Image (cartoon, rainbow, N blue to C red; front, side, top):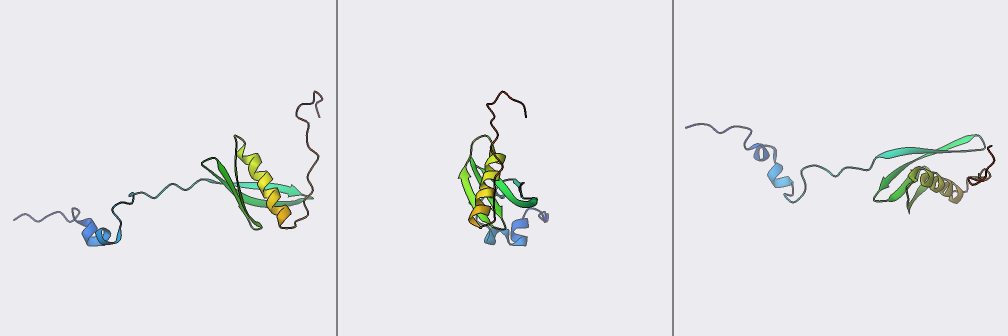
Length: 107
């Protein structure tokens, strides 16, 4: 009588059939990529990390976490969220004057 291959019953040998739910996919879901975001305020840098998933930007930092629906400019949205987090944490935030992108003058 021929012996069966030891690889054919690997789930039984390693307990896979009793501990895993057969309805779950074999591979874990892909986690969203995390990107750094930094703002500089009065010479001091504040850093957080943001992810984009299903059109939502989530920023996490030492001062808190915020999420918002985003458009095509996720990095700019992440910077705004980080500034909002810092304001809510009572970090003295002063913003630079806004740039007029519609002006004909070059600065």
